[in-house]
Length: 384
Image (cartoon, rainbow, N blue to C red; front, side):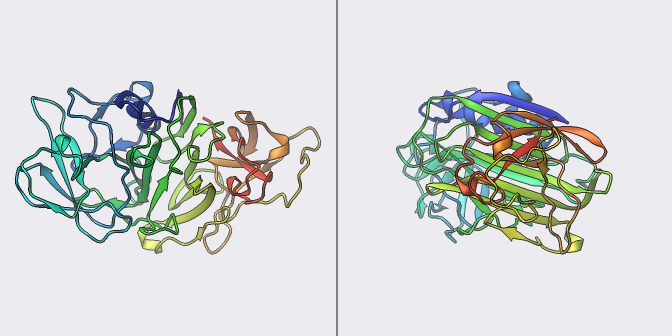
């Protein structure tokens, strides 16, 4: 396992700032050992961890000016062809086939653009035609561990801005078990109530903020978890995800399923949600909860300390797959009265001591707790 921690401001007022916050995700996934996918117009990058960065050899790489929303169908066309007819949309859940093209000039790295209007057939190149085109800077990461052959995990992340004319960050995130020729994930579970239900928009149209906060990633080639903008009390920035494989009784990874647990911004608050994705032979995604995490052990509505006998008791999460499966290893809950944000706590689980990083700054909001109770159980990620 490995950890990656950096400190960035969630703002896209310049290309450098936009790349700085967006590259935190690639830094985390590359540190954990996940594999960056290519061939569908994904952004070109190099390095790992702190050295991870999008390759940018010229001014063709531009900052987004229009906020992107998820549509149902993308079509990857390869290089832009002047005066060819392209179609598209930038309306959530649009059924219009939306074209993606790459464009480069003068030896610069090719950048992918998405067509955001109904149709056009102009010779004007995408960087100069912001009415019809916007940068579509995205990555697809694939698990690279021993369970990938039977149950691969794909994560697709699109980096844009919170709203048109706004410098706040926006991420479109999707999970799946495969990828098609157009860079769309297959086997994608429901992770939001807003169509298209397989893509979560991470933002609250929050304005860009020049104050830097921690971004914490940890994992290995089969599991990953992160707290993005930990400590930031402004709704619209902080998100937390735990992607954890099924565990045997000894804590060893299994290919039976993987669990996705999340806390992310939604409207003027947060949403906590969980889903279990089994390998294809076992069937479709089994459970979805938009109010807390299914399987989270509760401390009731207790607001005081749970500590006793000199210990801080943990509140694990047991994925529900028709029965209560073995608890997650990549996540642990603690009563909010017992911990402080950023605290590192040891927990004896699966026959060994493991360290967890606490995420608790916004825990006064019920939707920030996997238990869905204000000041209840707060989330922590395995920090090793």
